[in-house]
Length: 554
Image: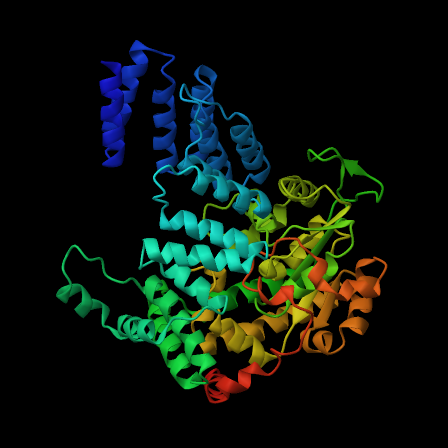
């Protein structure tokens, strides 16, 4: 009887009839308070409503009655949702170590569970471990009917870890499973594996089709191509046309789809400009926020890997607009054994948002900036360091390479007064084109400016204006590195860079090929090569469009 009610609850959840499902589960628990699966489904319902803390509490209660790996995987995913990467990794580790065999001798961890664990490890920056878990997920499939998404997940991990052949193989397998897996199509193009001529014709017709007309003429069983689908297709086609030196064709394809995406988002550059202006006012008219007086030798007890300096000297930040050389500089600075590359982390922005206690959903807005008047900077610095410990703490220093931490420089140096921040500065024209050609995380608000060449130009100018404020306010902590000067003279610029972060220089650091740490950015392929100036001046291929965008900005 209880099992029947449980199955009914599952069906109701699938139908999104959560209230009825909840009543079913309450009925089960009224008859059996130890029915673990009922607690688990209640946790699922809480998570569906965005109440992740409550979901974690209920799922942990289910574990008190039955130690199921499924529950542990679910809890790990929930901790990722609340950006607690330390606990997310701990629960993922526990799930893997709790693997048991059923009566037939097979693992109780299913391929789906392993896929979810791989995603958790990837999201907390453990890309090598994620790769092994995704491989195991595929190997565990008895029917060999591996979902396209699993192939894509493994391919992405291979790419981050530098196995480009493995990445291409699994992106192609994903497309074989699902011809509409356009994420895999774009990923292949970014790895240099471009669409065939036959594919180009079909894909071009999709991009150029009118969305409304397509919906009217297609069978209802065939889903329309979304704007996001078309974004992935258009970027793939653009790489194809660039290879054949048809830059005008590439630009027209990108412009058509990006304009539609910008309209869908309702983005106006003035939204970003207001943020830049508010930050400038915060750190000029009102001055630098007061920091807690922290003795240089004071330590905190945070982190599973031992004490962490709360004066911030262990943290090195690399910032700037995307596609300006931040990744190659990260590779250079992570060469010493005492520096860990932690990748692009949102930990600081999330911690600041949490401590601002503002009700809005945006990580950074005018309300958050205003609320920083009341921030406990010492506590923020401690909390930030603690939150990174899923990947940091193994070495005395680490690199946080989230380019858009540029907006948080003043707050970072208030919370971590001895942190070092490197600002990558690239020429206007090359920055405009490199941002326009790149497909960033779709719908991530910080990248909304990238859908229009004129908006990119305006964003660049506002970015530079704020950069000059940071240089003026924090001359000992904030370092401007010219990208072109760096690639033209990596030895000379590298020495100056190492002097700034306070580490001894070695000539062999310029050989990046020996740096095997994962790279989870759009530059994953380029930075495996030696430092080169080959991308300098690429904007000339789009010279007419760039000049027109600059003129229209005024």
